[in-house]
Length: 207
Image (cartoon, rainbow, N blue to C red; front, side):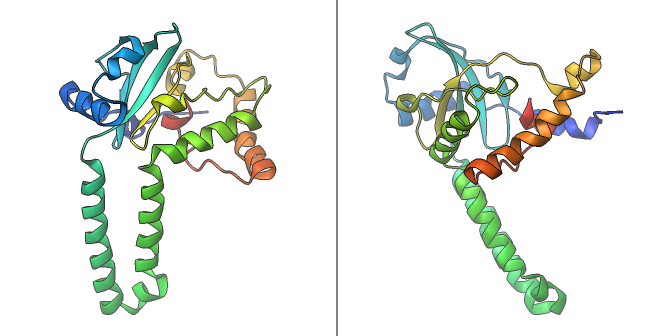
């Protein structure tokens, strides 16, 4: 039996950034006339997370899209926290032999490298395009199209795809057994065919 606990809801319960700050981020990344690219733009976010938030929009062509917009100022805050972690890991390694064996500083360096990649939406854009090619024609997996001309290091514009949160589907009693097979085998397919792997296959990021 699948259960969604209250603790799992923290993944989708982050306070959104006020729109004037989002507007400034869009101006810095897409230009002061960024609105000219869209027929409409919803200033209320669809979702908000620790690094960015998502807004729905319609292109001038009529194509529905979503924009994943990085929180203004989040990068220096993360870098500051990582510097603290690096310093603390050094103290711990000097004070406790066990910590040195674990290579805490190495763990922090790897964590910092991973976060740096997550903060660059261009990397995510390229990964999405590779996954999209890999899953082209798959009956159960759809990777949204990326709009490169409206994507930067801090803004990612992609095709809007209708869907439901996993816990909502479970509550409705309509989660097919085949889903477990699709969710578990899709990362394996990427690994075997392209050498790529998605490591964030959670309830919040899968749906």
